[in-house]
Each structure stands twice: as C-alpha cells, then as structure tokens.
Length: 111
Length: 110
Image 1 (spheres, rainbow over the protein chains, first blue to last red):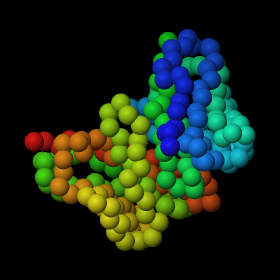
Image 2: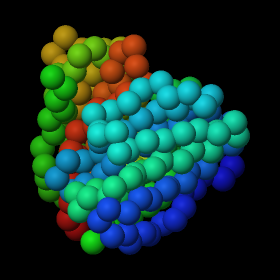
Image 3: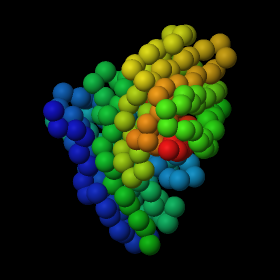
C-alpha cells in the first residue's frame, strides 16, 4: 500500500498571503489529522476529519482551516500568513482512529 | 491543562538498554502512543498502551501506569539506527485529539 502523500513538499510564501496544503491518506483510511511541528513546540494538533466532517479542532486561530473530500483526501488552508506560521505541517491518516501514519510533511517558510 | 513531559535528550551506548520516560496530565485519557522520528523524516508509530502494564514488541517495550500518569519506552540491544527523537502522545478521551510531548532526542554512541 502506498503511504500518506503530501504536496507540495516545500513552500515559500510572503506574509499576508494564503496557502493550501494537500494530503492523500493511505487507501482505506478515513480519518485524517493535521499537525504543525516547530522546534520549540513539538507537534501541535490542528484538526481531525472523518467522512468529510471535522470532529476535533486544536487551539489555533481561525486563519487555519481544513476540509476533507469524499475520497478522504484532505486540504488545509492558512490565510493571512504570519512569520510564526513557518513550520513543518504534517498530515496523518488512521485506520481506526488509533495509531496514526504520517506523511513526509510540507515545509512552509513565511518571509 | 494538558501537559506531557519527556526528557529533552538522552545518550546511550550501542548494545545497551535505555528507558525513556513520559509523564502526562490531560483532561481525560484514552491511550498512550509512542512514535519514532528520525531527523528530517515523519514520525512512525511504535506502540500503543490503553491498559496498565507492559506491551512488548521485539526490541521495544512500552509500559503504562494510568494512576500515576506515567509511561516509559524501553529500547533493548540499542543499534546506531535507533538514534532518533521519541515522541510520547496521549489521545484525549471522548475526542480524536492527540497531545504530543516535545520528544526525547536519543543519541546512540558506538
């Protein structure tokens, strides 16, 4: 089975712009979660989707949003980018809502 | 509040045994997970504990005490490839939300 894929792998944006990141889960996995990883904070939970519904959201401002499509693929969007949004964004899929399988991440740099 | 504590860094010798501790304080508990993350790579799932006790999986074992809010990951017969960060995570009960610790960076020396 193919693993979790994320596109793009690297992205450079300017403050104030918006960005959309994409995640394709492992085939058959319906739960998709998003995380922000920074050296100081570690992995911070953004949100989790199952069958196109957001079931949980982390403590991030409304500039961070996401969605899931009927084929379980997911996107997350960050609007009005700030320098502090520079991070590795990881997507993870899960077959049972327990163990998670992570994608390689999207490295976002905001200048 | 939600808090997970792990040592920042540990060093051990090839062939030795190392124990990485994790303590947690979360509003509800529904499982503790350990992940391994090599530098520049994505985390990979190692183990899952939901009941008290020891779970063994090859060279890796994980222990949980829910009453103490404590877990440890035990790595035996250390190999150089075990040099990585080890992340402890708790699933909050009633949710699909996971709280991660900041990770323990393990260096295995020859």
